[in-house]
Image (cartoon, rainbow, N blue to C red; front, side, top):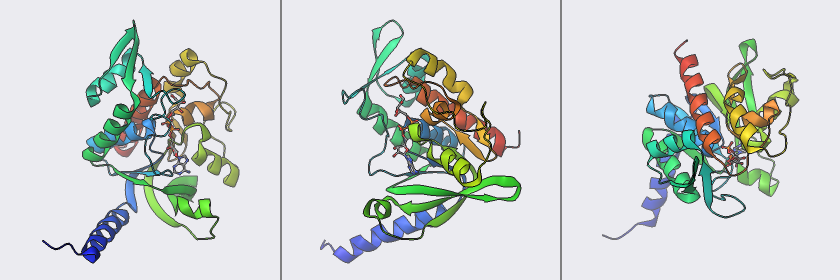
Length: 261
Ligand code: 48F
């Protein structure tokens, strides 16, 4: 068979645009394809929820593939290991209660599980704003190609509608910052603002993250490191159980909200 370059170009363009158009009205839009965002996407999609992730970078995984200081391994505790077992990621016990996994296997498996469950991941797209409608509810996201801001181009964005948004942007908790900075909103945190993350303390950080995974503003949930950053809890470094469990919890909160519970 003789290959036609234009057919290849048409296949890519048509297929991408079909999926992108479909992503313009979703149940849950997740910002950030790190471990928390991809775990949330997996559990949502598995439950039949129309889910999309927008990721700024070319690569997926956020801080996971880099492991600890570029040593591409992650550590999880017993609870996190259970999720890695469910995903089919191999772990080895290092010492009692400390399990080690290959960060590339964990990242690629999570991504594959989320996509195969039905979630769509769009990389190279940055969320630069939110859409707010009646009753001050977050109702969607404003997107632009990451390349436009990298190149400093003045290009207007496009918008998608979503019943629920999850801020899974990690340390920067960017969606929450947009909401606070642009509309001076009070978040569902102790201070009403973004408390900011505290210095590294894995034990405390991992124990607080589940409580910190919540709805911080109508229609806006926080998951992963963004949850600790917004609520003023410590960072935890290369232990990833909390990221996975927080992503799962965010999915459960969204599922309850979508079913009217
Ligand atoms: O940072 P990230 O991995 O967040 P996470 O899922 O996990 C945190 C850990 O990696 C680690 C840690 C705990 O062990 O402390 O840092 O909470 O992934 C966040 C993703 O969000 C993307 C960013 O590129 C990264 O891949 N992101 C951030 N802001 C935006 C964004 C944005 N405005 N639009 C699109 N993507």
